[in-house]
Length: 293
Length: 289
Image 1 (cartoon, each protein chain N blue to C red):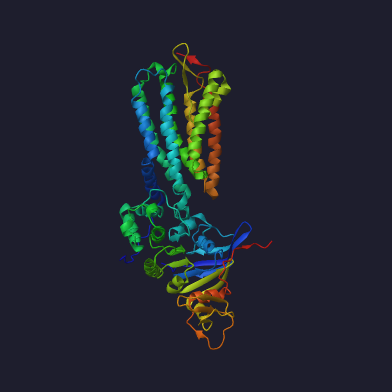
Image 2: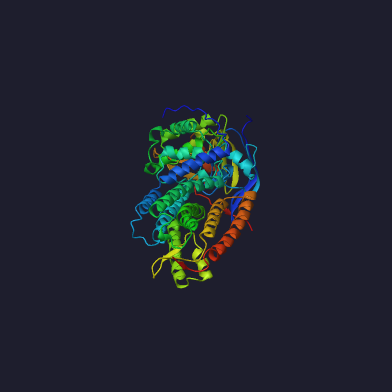
């Protein structure tokens, strides 16, 4: 089996007058790639393009060597795709098992015995093996999220697109999920969007930062974190020279970026520090931009 | 959680097997729908407990199966079609196309169709074909009336529900359509009572998925209205085809879309011709027997 790959060349997407994504060039290989960016940066739009849920307005997109614009090839992509959207509703009356089983059927698992075994496997992976017969509407938000995640894992897809997979999931499950994704990423392309920088730091070897529909950073997580080295320090008061400051649990202030004074107490930067620094120290969400007329 | 990760088998089943399995799944969901189950119970109850001697003409009882199997079946199929809408972000990126999913949904109509056939036999049991309640229609035309009033509404209702579910977002759309059809049938029937021999009114009366064919005469006996039940069956079948095509059109692209639109054109023309023939054929004026 050839190595899985995804290629984007000058890919853009507009919604009316709003440009959600512009001139994106990327090559994705097996491994976990994290997508970071403020709200409205274009993360979900990019993931929907990769998941064939949305066609690009411009540029060339190739997933596993197939063109999603061609219906037959799009079906070929979908046979090897797992997708967890940011938001998903569930039909009334469905249990977790019934829902994942239904999706498995739509993923062409026609043999009942094999399909049921696969459904049990993915429910087990997300820690829901004991809740298979529980109605989804009676589940907590985190459990529902895991049901949605389970369907994405069906068939161990070669391309796994996850839009905020850990939202509402408890820390223990998040750790387990990281293990599962790391295992899948040995042979598959896993792209996940999240606001949890610790998930990206713990799981991803590569991170893409999107801002206003454009790629702001694309490279190893360690390299991005390294960019903040020597620019993060602790102080008893917020430093007016820093770009961002906030009070930590110890009562001291963490200062990031800006003018670093001599003699400050430097600390090891986190991915979050580096991300904030890259964003110019602005923790405020940005919105998608209007297409220039 | 103690799961170990094992890679699942690659699903490479051909489309036909997937469609069959999906149709079977949707069929099971449809059959378990409380609305449909209620419709079946009421339809069979009104049919098999009929024939007590109080019925003077067949149209007194034929409307019930149409309402319970066709009307309730339409609402059940509509809700079934809509049920997966919330999950569309996931369902929409599976290898099974929307057209295939729609086709699987259309297959559920086979259940109410079967119930319709069963009801037809029940009706024949309660009201044998030689019974006076059928009025002046020939024996074969009497069967045609029963097929048009019981079997085909049972088939067409759910198909209409699927088409509606594919295109309309309003949750109560099927119920509203049910009321509209019910009201229309009542309206044109009253109109037909005033203009019993009008060809135009006959066409208008038959411009519906369901129509009455007989009326109790004021002077005793049963009056048959003008119009051909045979061509009316053709019109109903054309409506069924249109419902399927309209449902399939949603989400279709490229050559498939062009083909569906062409087929819709053909079905539309056929429907118009059959409607006109239904209105102008058969008895050319009311007849009482």
